[in-house]
Amino acid sequence: MSAAATTRRVREEGGTVGLETYWATDPSEVLRVRQGFTLADVDTRSTPGFEGDKAAAETSLAEGAVILAELQEKLFAGNQMGDDPRRVLLVLQAMDTAGKGGIVKHVMGAVDPQGVQLATFKKPTEEELARDFLWRIRKRVPDAGMIGVFDRSHYEDVLIGKVRELASPEEIERRYDAINEFEAELASSGTTIIKVMLHISMDEQKERLLDRLERPDKHWKFNPGDIDERLLAPMYREAYQAVFERTTTPHSPWYVIPADRKWYARLAVQHLLIEALEAMRLDWPMAAFDVEAEKARLQAS
Amino acid sequence: MSAAATTRRVREEGGTVGLETYWATDPSEVLRVRQGFTLADVDTRSTPGFEGDKAAAETSLAEGAVILAELQEKLFAGNQMGDDPRRVLLVLQAMDTAGKGGIVKHVMGAVDPQGVQLATFKKPTEEELARDFLWRIRKRVPDAGMIGVFDRSHYEDVLIGKVRELASPEEIERRYDAINEFEAELASSGTTIIKVMLHISMDEQKERLLDRLERPDKHWKFNPGDIDERLLAPMYREAYQAVFERTTTPHSPWYVIPADRKWYARLAVQHLLIEALEAMRLDWPMAAFDVEAEKARLQAS
Image: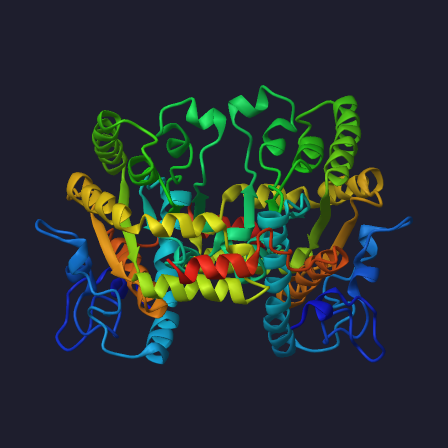
């Protein structure tokens, strides 16, 4: 793939979205949260922009992996040699079993580990609870040249924080503002932020939890607390709806991805990353040394 | 693959080493640094234990990736559910272009990113220089349940530190002892340590550096300082020899891997990881909850 091809961003006729050839229409247009968005309207089994089946999606994912890997290498290279300060941050939020882990494994797993920084946020520690909720988040912001992935994030503090009343309504309100300020700061320092909610139906979740209970090699992925959380799903959906309304900004958009079909969700997240990297118009950095002089020096060594 | 197969460790007749089927003899026996080892005696183009060619090695690497991925998942699972404190630390050392990056990309890249913690150690910062050399290293020791990879390590402090006289001979001596103490501490807290030096010839290095100079998409990987370091190669080899003599212990062995053939080095490092994980006799952890009760609760939800 030539450098020119990588920075080509024209949407062609007949099913090509940027560098990818397998989309019928650009999925990001449909998935992006806009004014008037309602979570309840999303069909969790739909596959916006993709008309193929599971097998076709897997082939496409492999094709996209090559595109994504080259773009990631250019992002990394531009920082290594050119001090390009830019970076990407993918925020993953979802109910249990929706497939965050699978995204990390199958989408990010196809990228050179040297260019990916993964941060998994669990229940905060005592030390973390004693500080502002963004303290532990700030420490894990990706370095320049990297693709960072947050597996859960500061949004937990306005999701479980709200549903379980771990903070007062006033504090939750304050946090929305703090999040917007934090993300504006990240964006202005060269971070492209992509916020994803993977959305599955209650039936699909029941099936996936049952699978974990039925397979001894999956027991470790199950936690009785998952069922307690499941019982609160309607409240979580309300909390997500509030998050979308309060924290969707042009520089830090939300995408809600139907995730009953894992293969679609993976392809869609991969696309959002490719799209973000394409928009950066990356290219191999110029040599910061005299190539011919170095060749001569090497030959003499 | 059954759990029983995974913990099988008997070396069978006729080319089977533990779970892997493609070794003629166990490579770790040959690669392991022992009393009387001399770096100068290593044939950098050899492929100890493997009789196939590049294509065969690539097929074998894909086969090994499946074995390694399952073992890694069990290591991770055992910590998630069973609080198993064990972990693995792979230390990678080498001259420039020897292939550390390729090991990370092609061996570790086949493992779920959620189970891998990669730490790349570059030139120390001012803050790091103001502290003991192990300060920055301790902060990056892998968590329980993880496979940690050090791309360069505390050994730089007795390699470049010695060759470039960044520290006094007395301080270098003190560091060998400090390293041994540090690694003994790691081992006693459940860390399996695998130290690898990738070893290439001067000719092979010249060819690889030239390739980086000839390809604009590889320029970013080249640094004029690489040639300066190359000129000191004989001194580095002496420094490595001293490292092997001073820091090879039963709980923290060194392996020197001939690396002129990248495909061999990758397969060999993958084997060392598989062997270490096999030796831990990992299995899926027992459920810490009543499976039937949880199934009933889920069905009612």
